[in-house]
Length: 298
Ligand code: NAD
Ligand code: MG
Figure 1 (cartoon, rainbow, N blue to C red):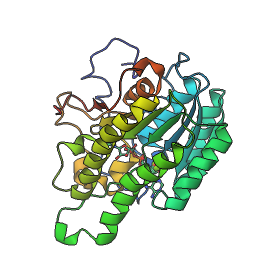
Figure 2: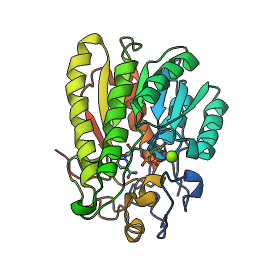
Figure 3: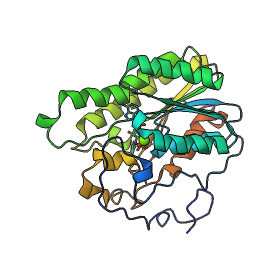
């Protein structure tokens, strides 16, 4: 079966033969070590000029959903800066190569999103490297499962909020000095914002915050011609999940409880981000686009 977003096919059967076994990587996980490899759309994604001449910053653009978004944006005609942790250089270098293969400029900006000074510098460096900025995708994120609040450390609680929430605030605030009318901000939230798992108390709380931040800020910025939206993925096959995002034994059945009966691939997320970044979504602001295998959302 063709694994692409263009062939008319049964979405239940698509990617259904992918059966990962239990596996573990230290945080942050690498796409290069994921087994089987995730589909980032590197073979399949076809652009049609929807982001011609645009300039995008994608945090966590080295792997998973962010990497699929970076590839799609480049093939739609955008120059793309990606942020990632220094340990993820191998994944990042591959995505930089794919952006350049699309004939676009790639800017690689490693650093730690928990650091406010880095977040501000990241925006400044993206603006310098791209010659401006009109798309910001706050996608980098931390997810470490914990099944007992008594053992959820202050450090983890702080790190999860810094990475998922504070970085979005610092980056968005710095970016606003550069974003012109027509620009788009897209935040990666999660189905966890509405249907939190008992083992993801800190993570799910950050995702609800991201959703509400998006809806509040969207109203503030819409009159200025800047649209803010979110994408809420369901269970997607990425290195986040195998680096303690889930217990190892849950990895093998990941996504089987969704109506489509399977986990999603990063390639299935990219079109949602392209839509929200492009002028096609000119009347869409404050929206959360759920890409979750059919799970009901509010
Ligand atoms: P991923 O591991 O491929 O991407 C997450 C990225 O976050 C990493 O590549 C890393 O570069 C970045 N990151 C983490 N901590 C960082 C730090 N301290 N400093 C700098 N960068 C840091 O996994 P993914 O699943 O593609 O995650 C992307 C986004 O999608 C996250 O916000 C995640 O919460 C969200 N999401 C994922 C799923 C899923 O099932 N995979 C579901 C819902 C939401
Ligand atoms: Mg990564």
